[in-house]
Length: 122
Image 1 (cartoon, rainbow, N blue to C red):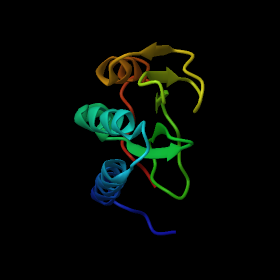
Image 2 (image 1 turned 90 degrees about the vertical axis):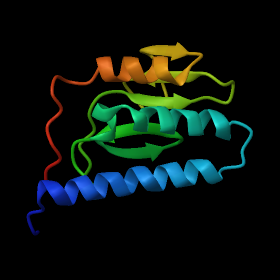
Image 3 (image 1 turned 45 degrees about the vertical axis):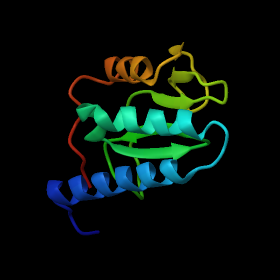
Image 4 (image 1 turned 180 degrees about the vertical axis):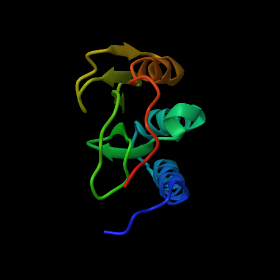
């Protein structure tokens, strides 16, 4: 497997963020505005934007490596159908908090990141 440079991973990470943002902007579900707000608020946070984002079951999670082998780090964020935002240690359990505003959920997620996330690696 070829060794990728930090610049390669930066490009892959930004590309994945842009894909998530585009997909979120095109959703037509009733809770789509909540999900869009979560994605945009997380993207606006530099430390989260530097991590590779991935989703599963509408949970936004982060990795210190790009696909195909993800290395999850920190909590996951959820946009819920009732307009709330969750932060959890797992994908679907908001065991760290439930909030009315995405900025509060994102702030808690940043607070629960391990100290100094490592740069993306191969």
